[in-house]
Image (cartoon, rainbow, N blue to C red; front, side, top):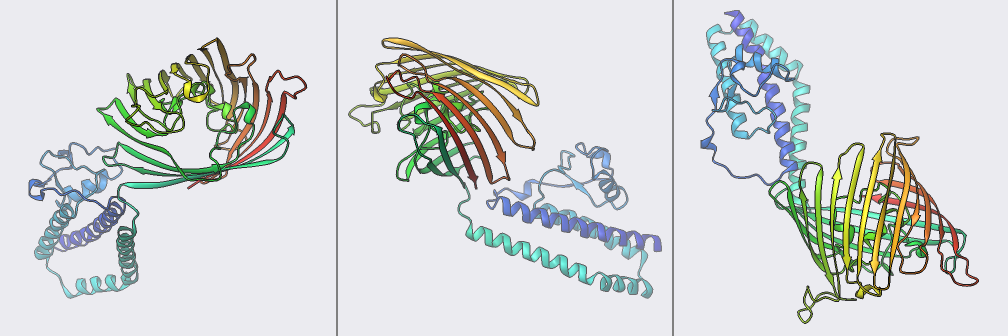
Length: 479
């Protein structure tokens, strides 16, 4: 009989441990997902388990297998679902916890009734209670504090569906060898606030507020993270993206999407880390529709590695589409299609076609661009580039970039890259650019990127200095 009593004592800490673990999980789950779906509790009828082998989703390799085996076979106080699953990776509801705890307490009560308790055993229990009184009080206090914090978060949360993310870019640029119009050290700044909302968990409604001022390296396409004037706040992005099935994603945009905004990847790793905008293949922007228009895009995953993207943007010069003009009669329109192979390994490649009416952005006429993009990742370093052939009224043009980069150079998370190429133009000669940059993430919030930029504008003007040399330093804050 004494053996049964001590078995009951062994079951007590197991039940208490389960209670603490489930309480913590429940509090964490409530903090992460304050909206809980309603469901019929009567439809879940838990079944008593007599052997751990009856649970079809519990394997001997699971880290808690021995604990479950002991509770099932020694104490018989574990219940499963009617389909003989335990669902150990899923959060526990309070009803399920109450049912499981009640089962264990019934076993404890039975063991105590069968064994009886003598005065010495009661004294031992009281001594253990007194010995661990401080620990139990601390644990109770921590649980109370978590409940209070959860209640505060619920009361003060910004939104149950929207997350606010921000980015601020500071660019300091010094011309070393100047071109016309850029002879002094300059500063360019840009700030963004993204309001990202999701209503199903897989969709996204984005409204981006942006303000900025200044630019540099303008004859070579400007800076990547610059834009705006006088820090006037505008709605830079306004679109809704949602999946249809498991492979098709549709995006409807009121503003902000054109060119490479419609594609899953621009392939070349210079796009993003580079300080000059030329690091992102500029054929996407050359002849492309103004981004202040409406549009629609599709992204279809043909396989796990092959993606077909397509997008259409329409805009009137300097304004939005109006009923007097209509979307498909807009003077400034563009559309793009790109087929990408994304391996997450050695080879990433894509072919793209882009058409633009061109009238609204000052080009002599419509443009048609055919491009190929390639990235070869060798692990420690990569080789990447692109080529683009464009035809337009009165001529044609070929632009390209190529370069090499080293990931985790001298420190984890960094990227050292050097690329060069000829930028697209409607003139006689293509501007030429070379940039070397070193992206250094100091932490999850701050990234510093020093860069050196050289360019030959090829203006062809008599007496003009066509070449420029710039030193640049960019600081990016993400929050």
